[in-house]
Length: 258
Length: 353
Ligand SMILES: Nc1ncnc2c1ncn2[C@@H]1O[C@H](COP(=O)(O)OP(=O)(O)O)[C@@H](O)[C@H]1O
Ligand SMILES: [Mg+2]
Image (cartoon, rainbow over all chains, first blue to last red; front, side, top):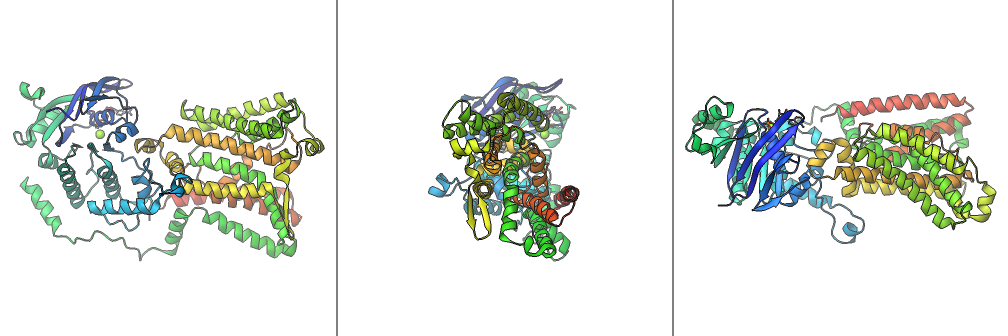
């Protein structure tokens, strides 16, 4: 089977730091791929390079077999790749609805939208409320409340809802449950399964091994800026995975080219 | 895995409705703070109403007359227009020190193109507007593409544009009578509509319409939302799909265009085209913006606030003059208002209700 998203030889340097060192990456259609690795291993850099948020110094990316060169996150979004960045990428002073529709606002039908460029606030608010309810992540009384008035978990929920609502080909989640409580994390995991059942593949970066082993179909172990190996969660234990990602153990040779 | 399942099972027994926020314990102050957070132009509006009432009580009908109140509008007209431009730039967390210089150069272009080259005044006006927009484009390009700090870019442009203005005009004023006789279009914004004692110049009407238009655009169009997002957190805006550079350049260009309109309005106000006019416009516009409650850190505030801020300055200036006070009292009080406004801004930013 052809990977839906494939990268070869990605390199990204920040000054003297090499965040990505000839890194390869494969995402199969319909799968949940977990990416694990120590802090600073380059996981966020990897997903930024494939979602257009940074332009890699070297290397190539293919989407559905087509070579793509994203120069901004907008390019990736237009191709149906939706990302929840670790920093969440929200404008604190703007409302939840404003943030969910940032960069893809809906305009009123007819002359008010075409001529006056007027936003259809009512519809954006309705959709935003619906998406948040679907997620059941939080009670937000007021969809017009500024994002800075939300708790960390609520903000993360809004960011995940935004990605789930708009992603059509690939959804990338960079540590989506880091600030969430037990119940909220569970909802995000359910949401991930939900998205998968719609046939959309997901890249999940997480430090939470139980979560990773519960939902992932394959696990990409990232170490020192590149893919160390890809393991099957059913064939490996959590301690194997942790040993590989910390360098305490080396994976068997046949895993390295999975 | 089993341990994980058990802790999650424990949570499953908890009540299903998610945490309601306890609204009952909010004090009046907290509610007020929240209200200001949502409606940032409220503070300047309250100050404006209070100052009108106080001067009205002190001065009676001398101040509280249609004539005096519309005189305030006329006096703040030019600064009000320039402050609109300044507001847009400050909302993106920038600052435009070149507004006054762009205004003057644009007015000089309108005058000189008409009288030196004999162009029809309509064409000369359009050239002046293009000139202002172009200066704004240079500012925007340097800020967005070259990533230079707006303060430095516009400080440089202020000097460059002002010097260009003096060199190009050879420091020569075009007299009011000449303009009135040969190109009255240049004085268009000085035309008046009288309603009883009230006098509205076209310049004042233009300012009010501009405020309404910008308020609409900032609140009800995608571009307006993007201006706030860029001022709030440019990296986040970029990641969530805003073309940050394009927004920045368009903001500075629009600022330049509005300044050029202010230059045209200034010809109407003073009658002549003078390369030495409008020197205080940048400081006065920043004053109006700050008193109007727009945060210098970007992303917060509204154009209505700026309008109220400009009016507050006008009310204080006229009120104190009618009271016979030394003009320095005006500056002193404005200075206090500026500092108070920034203190209020900091207080509002602390809100997380
Ligand atoms: N914008 C940046 N500027 C400089 N260094 C960076 C930047 N982003 C990441 N790095 C560096 O690149 C390395 C990988 O970072 P990152 O991809 O965030 O790792 P991870 O997400 O796996 O924790 C780190 O050493 C980090 O310090
Ligand atoms: Mg990271």
